[in-house]
Length: 70
Image 1 (cartoon, rainbow, N blue to C red):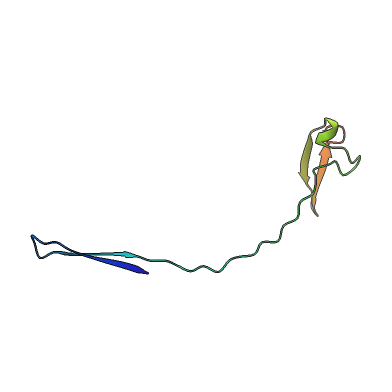
Image 2: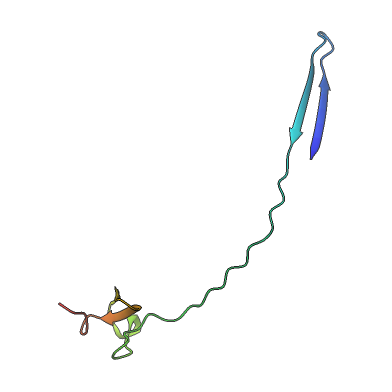
């Protein structure tokens, strides 16, 4: 914390400025990154196909244009 006290000469005013610094513990976040490819044919954006995520009961699956359920 830092403080600055300012005294005004023409009046009896005193101004106190304070800066408060809150210390936060860093939070570690575990992440993993994989290329978005179709779970069935293993083709993706580099092959000119768009990939869409589909949520099922157990997990999220990625499907290309050819394997996306209609």
